[in-house]
Image (cartoon, rainbow, N blue to C red; front, top):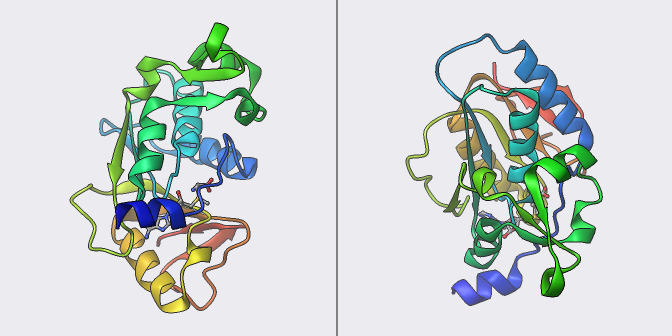
Length: 203
Ligand SMILES: C[S@@+](CC[C@H](N)C(=O)[O-])C[C@H]1O[C@@H](n2cnc3c(N)ncnc32)[C@H](O)[C@@H]1O
């Protein structure tokens, strides 16, 4: 079953995909009142980890010293292994700001030429879990931001409704849900308010 899942899933992703989401995230983090609990972000269906590491780089750079937790999950164990390794072809890094590359990534040399490795310190701060969005969620706590991007397109309307409801069940009131720019929640959920393209807020 796992091999079938790995073969059937489409794992296309890259660093800082859909940059307006990262701009919005930064703006909301700036506006978030200071508090002791960490900011919690879930990269649901995060594929090979670029989404989670992009968020982690932004948090480390723009909000130094602010506690945060990122949970990144996917149904596919194969992509999760690659996410945990944090080792990517250099061409995937074309949208990573230069300063972030220098600060958070190691450049491969010799046999590893044309690759980058996300710095161990950053890697160790992201928790990777295997989660099937079509199943009951494990105990992962609640989140300020949920990235549920570019996965709904693979589901039929009924499955979309239950996956979105499940994601919203772990989004705290006032928190934000991001979906892919080619996706919509029209007819899928009216439990959130559309705030910007592919960005919703839970009342
Ligand atoms: C196209 S990638 C999106 C990656 C990232 N969110 C992005 O926007 O760049 C879709 C991911 O959804 C995962 N996926 C598909 N069905 C899933 C399910 N039922 N539960 C969890 N993940 C799933 C796939 O394994 C794949 O890695």
